[in-house]
Length: 113
Length: 111
Image (cartoon, rainbow over all chains, first blue to last red; front, side, top):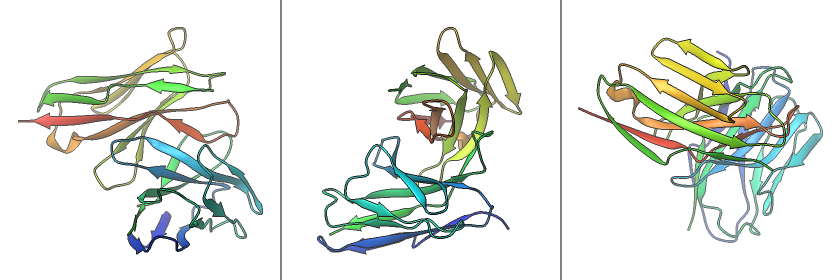
C-alpha cells in the first residue's frame, strides 16, 4: 500500500529538549510539507521541500529545522527555540506541479511538559 | 499575501443539505480545493475546482465563481459520519507552491 507514515502517533517531551518527528512516503512524490495544527485552527505551513536536498521556510519556520536527504523522507526537528511546541503536526506530499491534491500522514501529537 | 474566510461552525440535521462557503483573496489563482478532517485524523482531499461551475462527486459538490472569489462545498443527504472539519485551500502564489488552508468549518450533524 502506498502512503505516508508518521511516527510516533503521540510524543511527550520535556521542555528544552529537541525532538525529531518522522515522515516517510512511498508514493514517489517530489514535494513534501510539514504543517502545524492547533486546536480549532487551520493548518499552518512550517517547511516544505520540492526536491531532494532543497527546502524552503513556510510561514512559521522559527524554532524548527528539516532535512531532505532522500526523496522518501522529510524529518522535522522541533528545537528548544520553539516557544510553544505542543501541537498536532501533519506531514503531506504532492506528486508535482499539475495537481492540487496533497496526501497527508496520520499526524504526530506532540506534548511538551 | 492571501486569506481565506470560511464560517467557523455549522450545524445541520441528518438527511438535510448544508453549504459551507469560502471566500478568498489571493495574488493569483489556480483553483480551490476542499479537504475533510475528522477529529484526530488527517485531512483528506474532497474536491478541486479550477473553472467556474459546479463539480459533483456523489453526495458532495463543490462550486467556484472566480469573478466573485468565492466557492462553496455542498453536502447532501447528510450522515452522522459527515461530522468533521472542512477546509478550503488555494495555492498562492500560483505555481509549484504549497497549499494555503482556511481555518476550517466544523460541521456538526445532529439527529
